[in-house]
Amino acid sequence: MSLSGKKILIAVSGGIAAYKIHFLIRDFVKKNAEVQVIMTPDAENFVTKLSLATLSKKPVYSDFYGDNGTWNSHVELGLWADVMVVAPCTANTLAKMVYGMCDNLVIATYMSAKCPVFIAPAMDLDMYAHPSTQKNIELAESFGHTIIPAENGELASGLVGQGRMAEPETIANAVEKFFNKNDRKTLQDKVVLITAGPTYESIDPVRFIGNHSSGKMGFSLAEEASKRGAKVILILGPSVQNIHDPNVTVHRVVSAKEMLAKVFEFYEHADIAIASAAVADYAPKEVATEKIKKNDENLTIELVKNPDILKTMGEQKEHQFLVGFALETQNEEENAIGKLHRKNLDMIILNSLRDEGAGFKNDTNKIKIFTKTEKKEFNLKSKAEVATDILNFVEDQLLK
Ligand code: C5P
Figure 1: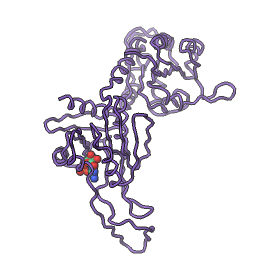
Figure 2: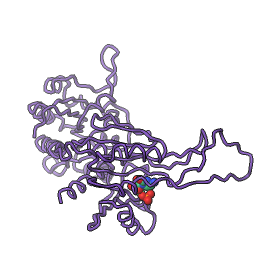
Figure 3: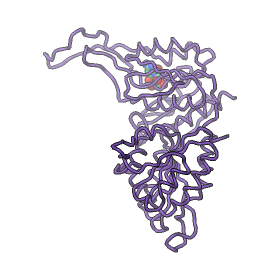
């Protein structure tokens, strides 16, 4: 697998190990990757922009403001990258990343980047071992970032211990390994239908019944399926999330009935269908044409059951591999397994509201997967990683 055409953003912070970055850049460029270097203002005390720019063949930025009143857009840089590598990552830069202390171009770019992030810490042994650094490493990992641990050896201070930045070769291997894994087109030409987000059921022209679903889990699944070569149809209830991916077609809907209709426009072409939407179970029987006035002490709205989209998909299942979600608060496993059978699913993903960090609005999730014969439990992870676990599991099932 080659790095050819990969867009690698290298962020250099101010540590003595910065001199080793030249070797990393040269290695990436030799493998035909596109390399963009940015640096913290302090890093300029250790290496020059000229040497980094010469090797990367691109101007190097350390400030929001360029020459002649130009603006170095951290947003553009962040969105451009396929991966971001922060190396060397000082204790200070690590802490700023973890706490969002956005006072320089590197942190602003990091916070704008949507790509995987690799962090190669480098500092003196006591700084590395300090509980604050160790906690920050843990936090960075919980964001889904990859830490390339510091190595043991002689340090610039003359002391010996863990704190040396990993060798450029080790950093390059971690990045290449990521692309190797990531570029497998295991769902090439498969059609993956995903429902996501909440539904809104109108009460009158200004009010609705809805829920806190963000749609993030569905988006992560769409991104992951697209990476694997699938053609993704994302049927999305009202959600502020957005996706710009040529392999993902987004169809926005509002109510459960609209979602049902849209799903069945595409269902017969789907190879895999995943229902991650939090569909409202009930909708007002009648929608008032004018805004309801607050005249009485009590207001009664009659609700009627919405269609169960997933159950209908189960009833009409032919070749599709059908996956549902269950968000439970009690008798969790029993309820999830009940739904698996009742809705004629091939697989169900349980997330419990009891687990901290799992469920609706969070960027993380903790899941258990059930099929009719298997059960697998996963740790708390970023939703992107959870999407990877889910699709790995689906692929394993399809191969059986
Ligand atoms: O029965 P329950 O709502 O708990 O089932 C959850 C699963 O069913 C989720 O996968 C959800 O997307 C789907 N569902 C649906 N239509 C509904 C209710 C739930 O597709 N009306």
